[in-house]
Amino acid sequence: MSDRAQDILRTTFGYPAFRGSQQEIITHVAGGGDALVLMPTGGGKSLCYQIPALLRPGVGIVVSPLIALMQDQVDALLQAGVRAAFLNSTLDWPQVQEIEKKLFSGGDDGLDLLYIAPERLAGERSAGLIERLHAQGRIALFAIDEAHCVSQWGHDFRPEYLQLSAFHERYPDIPRIALTATADEATRNEIIQRLGLDEARIFISSFDRPNIRYTVVEKDNPRRQLLGFLADRKGEAGIVYCLSRKKVEETADWLNEQGFSALPYHAGMDAASRAENQRRFLREDGVVICATIAFGMGIDKPDVRFVAHLDLPKSIEAYYQETGRAGRDGDPSEAWMAYGLQDVVLQRSRIDESNAPPEQKRLEAQKLNALLAYCEAPRCRRVVLLDYFGEQTTPCGNCDVCLDPPELFDGTVVAQKALSAVYRTGQRFGALHVIDVLRGKKSDKAAQWGHDQLSVFGIGADLDDAEWRAVLRQLVAAGMLHADLAEHGALKLTEEARPLLRGERTLELRRHVVKKGSAKSKAARKAKTTTLLADLSTEDATLFETLRQWRADTAREQGVPAYVILHDKALRELAEMRPTTRGHLAMVSGIGAAKIEHYGEELLALIAAE
Image (cartoon, rainbow, N blue to C red):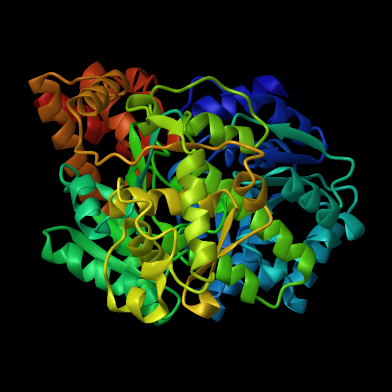
């Protein structure tokens, strides 16, 4: 079995060797076992069900939540010579009939893999198709992609996923493989329980994405900060996440004014506009998509070079999944986020005001607190991030904290002053007024409420506005202050504040520093980029661009994304190796037998002409 799997990997998909636990997973599932696979985005999850489906008799049924992902996966499989199709709402009746005919066809006209939307499985017709296939012994396996969608308390819950437990009940003889890139222990347990995977082997790969650099900045004119981050990234593909639809639209318009090619994407747009903008992002180079969380799950674009957050996500899982859309090709990429006190207020109020049961609210609050701890962490961001998923690691040297460590100080007295000011002003005012009182600013509001007569008035004159904002934000993140959106962001003390006010505990804080892109961090970034991206000679770079243009033209003719033809990594290898025969082409990563058959002569001719 393993020899056949290795042969399919090489001849069909064009890869010389399996990565990580791929081979072990494939052997287990191909042998009839159930599996739950947690593997980071870009780690090669798809091969873990595609190859077993090719090894076993019958058709692999793949449940996939997004139409665009199905289309891209099927396009890529067809390019590799695998007989694949999908069933979703984009097909007309004759197309559906043609695919159903192929399902039950033997020989070369049949199918190896069928991708199907979860909501379609709820229909009687699709259920009948599955029953017929099973009766004929023609189901190779069930693959449930993005399995975290089954978690009712997760960030991507899809009610249709709950019905997938029926696979276990009706077809216990068919192996099932559930896959996700994002699941903490609680979500893993929920996946196992809801999908009936109690007997499944669990495969957990490292959650680390070493090619992604993580950076978090305190909000201070976020548009200006975003522009600074994007300054040397024009022409690169990226995603900018915003909390509201209005902000998505405004940010896309503003980025276009700054010379970027930016498109909006959110659930309030009509379906045709959303589909067109997603299509352009996937198939054109250098497009930036500005989006709410409605965009992104399952996006299979390998060359996304950055993911930026202008607002705080809901949880570390959401953050990890959203940032994980960068750098699927393994090349250096960036995850950048600007966050401030108002973000915390909005996310906390979202939890408080929801109709969720108390247990769910507590869980969501815990997840938000974990994300705030990540944002305020004085140690390596990758260490904090991976620790959340139960994985231990050492400082990475490739995040903002490692490259430019924050200065820490004993903030006990400063925090006591801030908490006292909140208490003495009646716990009725937001951060701006509390800071004015701390700094002793004469204002109409201070005079109106008599706050200029308080003992706390002016006790914090030694710190400026930005420094006090940083203190208050850290106190909110630490759970000592609560910002009540129902009272316009009024700060209120929590029980956690009492030990500090009584002098029963101390508190370490990060010192606020105005950062101006230090030479150290720029040099480190350049060094990291040079390490991960092999430098091409002038001649090789010219050939690379020639091959890139050929790929773009070929993709346009076929109506598929460019990366479905060949990844950038394959183009770089072609430019450096300059193969002269079909046999040499087979040594390039990602070029299998079908691609050599389709494009071999063209590629050899282009290389020979340079």
